[in-house]
Image 1 (cartoon, helix red, strand yellow):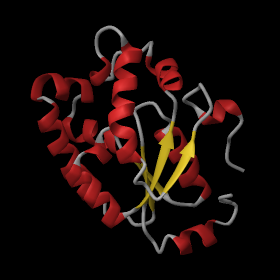
Image 2 (spheres, one colour):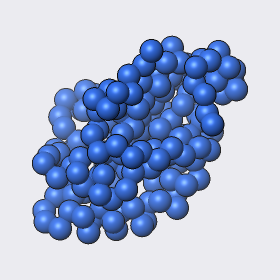
Image 3 (tube, helix red, strand yellow):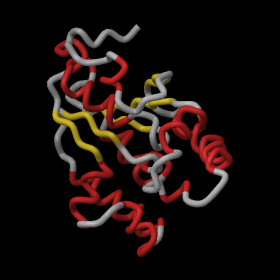
Image 4 (tube, helix red, strand yellow):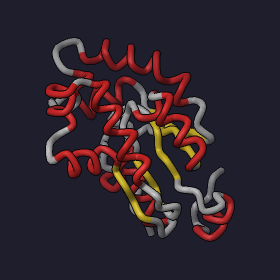
Length: 178
């Protein structure tokens, strides 16, 4: 099992590469990323937050006003601006699916797939409306379709971790960092 009690050991194995968390929206990349960064004494970056800050608008609004293709272009540009090798990066749900981002992430960092079931993703997203790919009705059907398409690509990550918690806040479940 992966033991992150020795940040020096883990950081040496990673050869100063950033850790890039990939996976579906609401899988826990941000919550786990923050904890992992704290434990390993690394900086934390949330790609979606960086995009929203740069564009001064929400991901939802970018999708609505510019479309997904333009968003993916912005996402790639923002991803390549992160030059911090001592970091943990929570990517967006579709980042690793974009072939350009996929190649860049594999060259630049150590990838970890945060896996979550369709039921966990539904539980975490059913009461929010800021997930553009889940807009409208029949959310579970959309989640299952995205998982079917994306899982084989996420599976190319170097390591995978299965999330079994229904809450999106890992610290609420007693997974706080020592």
